Amino acid sequence: APPDAAKPMTRWWWFGGAVTPAEITRELTFMRDAGLRGAEIQPVYPVTVDDPARRIRHVIYHSSEWYDLLRHASREARRLGLQLDLTLGSGWPYGGPFVPAGLAARRLRLVSQDVVGPKTYAWNFAPFLGDDDRVAALVLAAVGEDGQPRVEGARVLGLKPDAGTAGVSVPSGRWRLMLFVDSPTGMLVKRPTFGMEGLVIDHHNKDAVGLFLRAAGDRVFDAIGTEGGPPFHSVFCDSLEVYGADWTERLLAEFERRRGYALTPYLPALFGDSGALTPHVRYDYHLTLSDLIVEEFFVPLVAWSTRRGVKARVQVHGAMGDVMRGYGVTDIPEGENIF
Image (tube, rainbow, N blue to C red; front, side):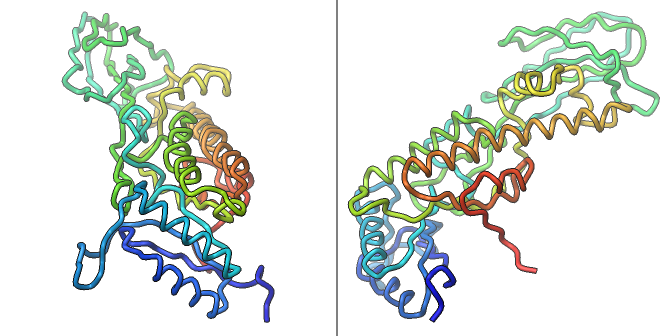
């Protein structure tokens, strides 16, 4: 007869929202009788189409019926003495249809052109830019004997925000024009349920995080109510499998504020061996990304959870940053592997 705190939980995946009040009650009762402490609801992808003959009907996320199902699950878990957790949003990583490209996961992309001086070179780089791209910087770097650009003596070229061309006075020797582009990764939420398909948020941007917490957190909690207390014990954040998300709009400004020097002339070091300073620049770059994901994602997530009267249970691994520091700010740190 172990105490409840020693009993295991189970993941409870709601495929396509194809659940009913009667089945919710039956399964929760089964969990209690099997000796489980409770369950974590994870709304995920459908596994079949609507099938009236088998009484399978999917329910759209954020619909009134969806909220009724969550409300029923919360009440029944409380009646049965079970712990009930909820994955914020659907699938993973966090995101959804409400995320615009400007607040979606970003990456730094390089477009380059080798030139030999002395000459005046007119470069039309507009064809390399997409609708949601932002020019982060244009750098002219000398090319070494190994074919790699050097950060020593690199020149940052001024550009107008809407510029699509650059006129460059190239000194004598081999040089590389390097256009650094802030681009969306285009990554979509993995395995979302109906109604939650969309872009993954920029986890380094508190504005994107705030948008998600309002759209997938406040909206749900406000709709199902808090009669008898918070509807869940904790909210869950699955592993941060945010592939290629190595940039955010404010990174250059945050880098200079935190590291004490401008990153822009050293950007070539992120794409190749640019000499002795390369490892130092990369360390400071990754340290800045780490600071941002901890301070602008994990900390706000935990603070929001506290305001809502629930715990934040988080799988930090996969984050572009100091995983142990991220785990340190969560209420319930969760791993994924057993050795």
